Image 1: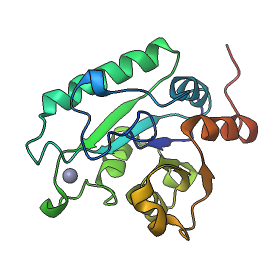
Image 2: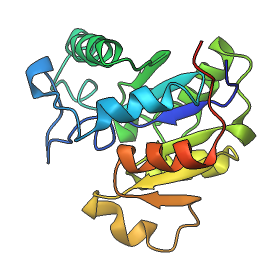
Image 3: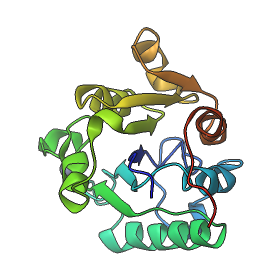
Image 4: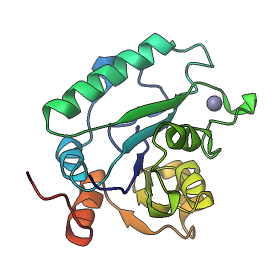
Length: 187
Ligand SMILES: [Zn+2]
């Protein structure tokens, strides 16, 4: 298995973000264009593949842990059916003002993943996200950072941020990886 870890943000990377709202129900979870094909490709290059997502809607009382887990069950089932792989999903349920250690850009979820997968080396890992908080977390941990375009709110903050690469979509990133990184040979 490859030893390179991949950290993925969820909303705006794997699935379409809901402007001004949380994805609270599996029916509201719509994959981004070609995201399933991208995950299938990335599964041949990275391990583990870990989702790290801020879900403050829980702390705000807009949805429950069960709601988020139902969304993730659908996500994982569809990714698996398409030949992809997500090895773990971590989410932060807290509000920004709670001051927790897991809401990105805090590194708590990345460290939790490293406890579960001790082979994770941040220096060899990539963080893929569409938010300033994703890039800050990845950069602070010494990861390579891939910014997925689309989050207008963060555009100014990210304009001059030294990301490793800028991509139009997860599919765009996956194609870059396919061209530039060693893959597992098919068995
Ligand atoms: Zn948290």
